[in-house]
Length: 150
Image (cartoon, rainbow, N blue to C red; front, side, top):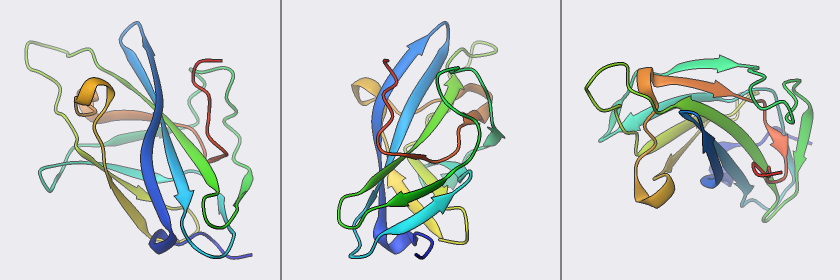
């Protein structure tokens, strides 16, 4: 089976959850291709606003959500609608008086050389994803759609 290619993958925001200044999002990857494919490991994420890259500091393997594994596993995504997830967390508490910069797109570098999926995103209530300091805590790609409200 081949590594998933960006030309056959779309990304969309799934469920969210938040508490104590930390926001969690499930980014759902959907296979639109005619063949199953695999992903293994961590994606590379880049926040974008108005066509410009925002400062993005990615931390892999965070254990803030104890019910999720930080150990990468080979994930097979079935053809035409099969899904996998990336869970990301960030702080929405500004360090001063300025608002945190809002990202309206997320570039998702697929592990294994599958290319980059660019997806337009707005978070809860239509607001952009706005991680203060650009720091994202990222979990490895997981099979299916992750329930952030277990």
